Structures are given as structure tokens and as C-alpha cells.
Image 1 (cartoon, helix red, strand yellow):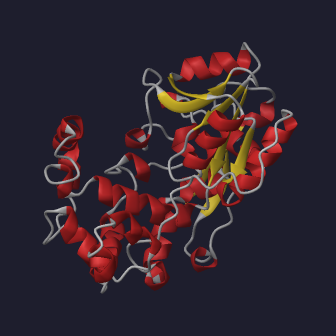
Image 2 (tube, rainbow, N blue to C red):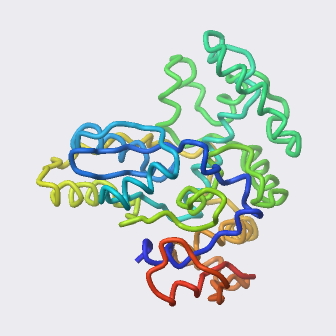
Amino acid sequence: SSAQTLQQCHVDAKKYKAHIKSMHEPVMTSVSHKHKMIYRNIPKSASSTSRHAMMDFLEGQDLQLKHDELINLVHEDNYTMLSFIREPLTRFYSSYDEAYFRMGPWMGEGEIVWDKPKLREWFKNVKHKMDKYPYLYEGMKEINDFRKMYCPKEVLDTERFLDCNKYDSIDDGRLLKRFEQFVHDYDGIEPFDVHLNMQTTNLIYGSSGEPLPMSALYNASNAEKEWQEVASQKGVTIPDGEMKHGRHQSRRFDVSKVSEATQQKICQILALDYCCLNFKLPEVCDNVGLYCALEQMEGKRMWKKDDSLNVVIRPWG
């Protein structure tokens, strides 16, 4: 299973430092004390659906907890900790879309932030991360400059801008070209937004590189049925059709036109997730020289139960 594979994984915390929160920084969770459950939030992996399930059906609440607090709940109070994971290539498209919107120049000034001074201040402090990629927002300043590149004019004219997410993108190739250039230039080590952090790095114990003691990892593509099963084990029924809280939206460029070379580079960037979460590589990435290596690790591991855990999985290639 993915949870078992994760327990055999060890992350190079120095290499992926920018992806990882320290042990002293709180992380987003949803906790049900009644059912002794912790959901560890991973952005763009059924996180909205999962928070809905925890809060509306399992009497949970969103909590920012430090890693040690999570560990104590699991090891001292016998809580179970679970999360949802998503096919890495598919998630990357969604993560980039979210990150692109969040880091656009319209976050510094304009209609969507004029009454949000904290958001403007946040953007001021992080916008330097985009200096490596000056082409991403070329010719854009306001949010409408962006909307015009992907949203049909007849929808924009209604000023119901959220409806843009219901339609296929009208991108003429410029947004796709910028995405592919970004992938070409991106090393996978320093993400410009939290949504580009890898899934595996959300599931480790701070800078130790060791995995959190996860009881289960479920597939985000089947989130409704998985949550119904989790709830049923707690004596709770989640009716069909109640799990529609994810932000379903079209990509802002045509994913079907992404080149094979770009897809292969993304697989290389996300090798950690493919190996540590036990996902099969997409066919397009079968022959790019990516492997999941088993290596003997010296020294003791956390949560160690037997000597076999000294053999760890690491991406190679």
C-alpha cells in the first residue's frame, strides 16, 4: 500500500528544505477527537472534500498542529492519521494553476485585493520568488489581463467570473508555452508557492526526513467512496452526492497539448512522490531512466519496529 511504502521512505531533508516545514511550524490538519482521527491536509489532493467530510460528518475541526503534537496524539492517545494522495503528474497541473493565480501581479494591487491588506503584504514579501521566471506574467498586470487569456468573452461580459472555471480554456498557446518554459527551467527544489510542494514532503516529520506514522493513504480520485468507507467504520453514514466540495475547474491551458518532453521532466521533478507513494509512472515516462532504489541506511530510524526498516526507498535517475 502507499502508506506502507511511505514508511520505508526517507527524504533528503536538506535537498528538499524549501518543501518542508520545520518541526516547530504548525501544519494544517482536521482533527476529530470523538473518533480519534487526524486528517493531514495536502493541497490539491482532495483537501476541500476531506475537510468537509471531517467537519460535517465526523465532528472534526481544522487545527494548526506542530509535528510533535501529531506524534503525541498517534503514539500516546492512539489516534489514527490519514491523508489523501493524487497521481503526481495530474496534481502538478492543478498545483501550477493554483500557484500561478496566487503569485500573479494582481495580488499586489487591484480589484481582488483592494480590501485585503494582509494578502497584499504577504505578496509583497514573497513576489521575489518569481524573479527566476519573468516570462510567466509578461504583458499582465490586472486579473482581467489573465482572464482574457483563458475565459470566453461572452462569459467575461456577464462579470460572473467564477463561471470561467466551467468552460474550456480559450488559451491560444501562450499560457501553455509559459507553463512548458517554467517546467524546463524549474529544478523541483525551490517551489515558488506551497501548492508546488510535493505530497511526500507534507507527510514527513520536519527536517528529520522520516515519515509521519500514517495509518492510511487514500486515492484522491476516489475521495467520496473512500470517505464513505472511513466514516462507515466509525458508524457514520455519508450519503451519496454529499462530497462535492472540491474546486472542480478547467485547466487554464490545454493539458492534452503538453509535450512529451515536458511531461517527462515533470516526472523527473516528482520522482520522490512516485517512489514514496507507490504510484505507477505514466506510460510517457516509462523510459526516462527513473527508478526507485532500495538502499541500506545506517543508524536508527524513528518509529522503527524491525530491522527491515533500515532498508529505505529513494528515487534514483
